Image (tube, rainbow, N blue to C red; front, side, top):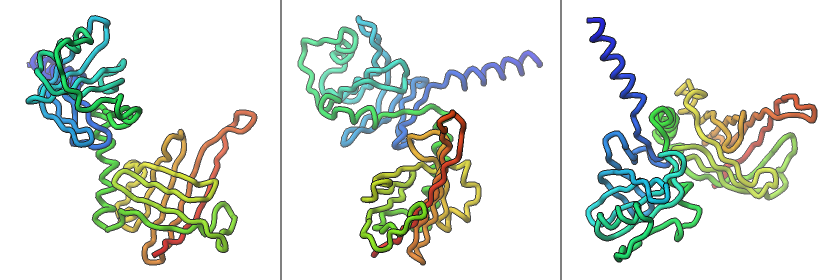
Length: 268
């Protein structure tokens, strides 16, 4: 009996460890599942559901190949399965796509419907796949967006900067927009110190759902380490308050807290 329990436990642990399913960061409904050799992904107006195989080319490059009906996808992997260097969306016979991946050359006509050579630089931003653990965290984070949606708080608002870091801007015409979407916030103004600000909701920092429903949200500032924000959106008073906290280093390499507060008025 103990041996059976051990075998079952080992099987479960092994299954979890080697689960190779990756989810599209931009839309968690889309994925590439290497364990079950199946994919369901979308790019712009193109989408595909089909079987997956990996092919190592003659030159040592690794490709993820997704088979559709007559349209197939060829994705060149980086050092990781969920990161890609380039892509081709091709129309033609699947065996020719396999040959193209194997030899990185084909003498048969394959119609190129889309490629990162056409959408330069955009592909790497769009195809950002995450693993199972990251998926669970992102899914929980985006529940915050669902709560905001239920309270009709999502949207894009025109704003005027009233005050920032102790400086009054009442008499200046400093305007911009603030957007709350399902993932986070985006603030854009013509204030030189706040031209663009983006932040992402964090479920671990928003334990009180009632605060979220009142328009009080906490998250992490994008592209910065040890940087948080809190946002108060009061539609009744037409006021938005942004607080930020960053941990920075002084000239001697010691950490210090940098706090900033900016107040906005929502304009009709």
